[in-house]
Image 1: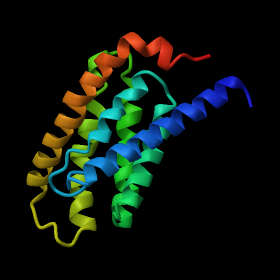
Image 2: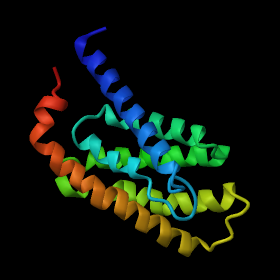
Image 3: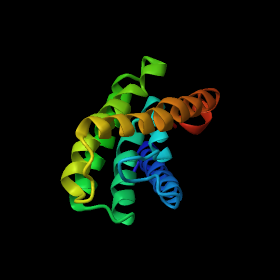
Image 4: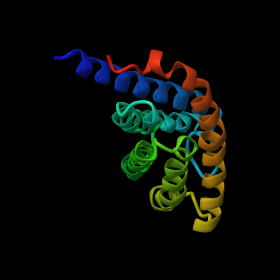
Amino acid sequence: MTNKRVLYLTQAAMIAALYVVLTLFISSFGLANGAIQVRISEALTILPFFTPAAIPGLAVGCFLSNLLTGCPALDIIFGTLATLLGALGSYYLRRYKYLVVLPPIIANTIIIPFVLKAAYVDVTDAIPYLMLTIGIGEIISIGIIGTILLTALLPLRNIIFKAK
């Protein structure tokens, strides 16, 4: 295995682990799942700006987080898909530094309300309400915290995410 592959796998694994830890932490406050959620781990969806290894790392991290927090199968699958789509969108917008937050906000705001309605029997809220609450949570976790993280990591990008 080449050094680049090892680095790629290591970065992806570290991002997945960080996503899981942050999700489990915020889950203890009841904010990782449900109609009102501020999943701070979603702030990591800005990381494809720095490395493509973040894409599988975020997908695996989201999958494991949903599994560990006891989400139904539909949420595990489609919640992971929403994060994956958001990460891919962030990667493709990496040339536009502050636009990388938009794809994960949009993907989660559109997909997650339908997942909540389909996967959770006790969720009786209307889709527009769920889009509003999920969207606000995404703006907080990705739009605000993610932008702060992006800004903080910029001066360190060649140290943390170097390609060699």
